Image (cartoon, rainbow, N blue to C red):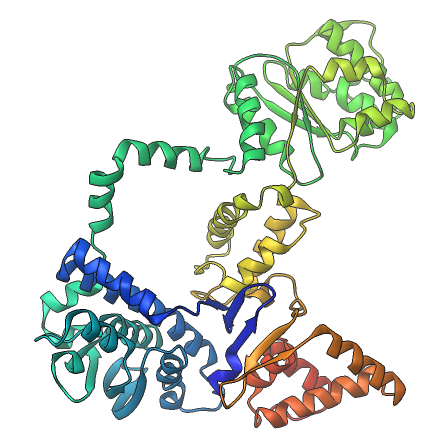
Amino acid sequence: MGDPLSLLRFSAASGHIWLDEQRMLLLHARALAALRKELFDSLGVERARGLLVRMGFASGRHDGELAVKQRGSGKSNEEAFLLGPQLHALEGAVSVEKVALEMDLATGHFFGDFLWTNSWEDEANIADFGFGEEPACWTQIGYASGYTSAFMGRLVVFKEMECRSQGDSRCRIIGQPAEAWRDEAYLSYFRPQVIGQQLIDYSIGLEQLRAVQARRQYDRKLIGVSPGFRAAFELLRSAAGSAITVLLLGETGVGKEMFARWLHENGPRAGGPFIAVNCAAIPHELIEAELFGVEKGAYTGAQLARAGRFERASGGTLFLDEVGDLPLAAQVKLLRALQTAEVERLGSEHATKIDVRIVAATNVDLQQAMQAGRFRSDLFYRLNTFPITIPPLRERTTDIPALIERFLEKYGELYNKKLRGLTDKAMRQVLSHAWPGNIRELENVIERAVLLAPANGPIEACHLFGEPALRASEGSLDAKGRVTEVHPDALGRLCDEAFEHHIDLESLERRMMQAAMQRAKGNLSQAARLLGITRPQLAYRLKKEGLPTG
């Protein structure tokens, strides 16, 4: 399983503490104790107790998921399970000593008996309330229950049988499957309650909350709460009820076609067709036939008369994507069609009346294209009646979590896979990425991650972009609890030394893998973490080099 210290990383420059891929916080115990006391004063003992138990349960569940991910690395199930008590101690909560442990993953049997010393929650409770008649390590009971439930794959609940807060010399906890306790009142602490909703109703006002929530959701298909998105959406909504020509501007992948479809579906032409044409994808010699249609015999190979996109869109909306890439000859005919509301098929001498709403889109700077002679100014002014600029994803990062949720739902259904969202580190990578491909790139990345991530597990950083990003200045704990930091300059010195001694890349990589395996004592998962790559990546490279994998 490896030393849990190896999972902990500190990055002072970015303000992050990582436990594997979970973001952690280093809090003052007295500050947390003050919050704990305020919960008692505000909610009463019973409600505060339930809230603290559930908060601890959520924390323990996350660590339990980490232990499940680490399971199967050559250790016994008991050794893997005991990572939890080590993590609980590492996180500063309590020191744990095993008295007895029985577990069987196949049958779901579990019985655990542990002793606690140096409980922060005991210290806080005694300082604030003195000694009482009830145990008080409620977040820690929640943690132990959440951790074990995640590890066992079923609800396992711990009870505090002895506690320093009630005068005992130590704390002692026992855990077993929830149904074995036959104590419905106690089990109710582990179930969600509606305390928060009641407080919101009384203190904030339900109507105000609903108004805020409606604004945050914004729309069923177009997702966003960022100022840039909201400004673009308000313009779109203003244009929806009319037949005005709309020009959508923005980089590739920002969702121009989604905006165009929303405009069509929420306007008076929603019952008509929505016809989209990518002007950049059609060969120049065929663009006129595609837009305006062709009569039989108009040119060699035209064996049948065919309606163009304008005619097919009659009564609805024609979406001209990448209109900035139209050839000049087609621009002339497009302008005439817009001005006269009629088109002529190639090879025809008769004009056909059309009733079409035009929505155009481009990622080209049409002002520059006009100056360069690549785009007609009269067509520009015709299309530019109602311009809407859609901001790039890098300018609307607050929209990314909601977009990810939508894509996870979409591809989870498509591939029949349930996932628990992104880890903290994975989300940080997503939010810091430049997204040159915008929403289209984000969607592709999430689809790939859904395929790579294990079912019922979280999406980790390694599932997103392939190779993990290089760490900036980060530190880790040594065996004595001291933070040791590695600066980027150290990498430069390492490179200089490798060049000076004529060490080639292949030899360096091979030696680093061997050293990592030696330091991890053959534990493939721990060695992969030391190298900053995934376990499958390390296994593949070791096999490729003919090196032992354990």
